[in-house]
Image (tube, rainbow, N blue to C red; front, side, top):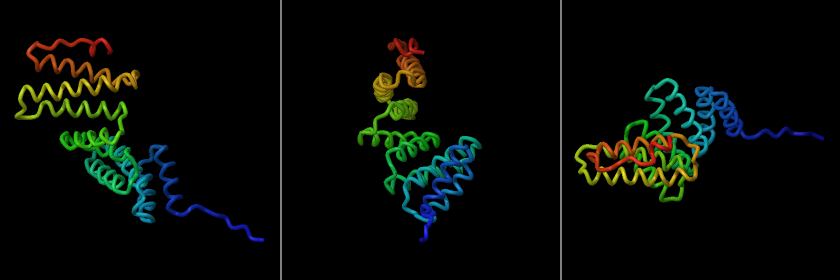
Length: 195
């Protein structure tokens, strides 16, 4: 009687190697393993998502814009091949890091419309709207609408994640910004209390 050792397909073995590398913060090695994974199956959305995450970590470590661009491309492919809303969220985050706040706003709004509403998505969307509020050629009314929407988003996220300190910090920053842009007509009330 012969016992055949059944190994998972090469694609899956390389993907698992990449996950081990990623957990050990060996991001370049993770990218290399994921390159092999994708060579085996170029429609494997989770491989693009993982490679994008590794590239984004490399960008955060070394600051080389090429890593950020690679992460964005991989997240785009992950979205195309049906990875998850996480890929779209990561793509939106890349747009924020690229200072493309208009496109990031569209990405985060799409996530919210599709029901992917998490405290970090709401926080990031609020921050994007705060960034957009300093855009050129905006009327005072448009600025206040963006800041009001940021306020609404942050306040709706806080009850679900009261320990996420950056939600409270962003609310305090927002209230100070609203005070500054209102010529004293708006008084900060509870944003500063929460920090």
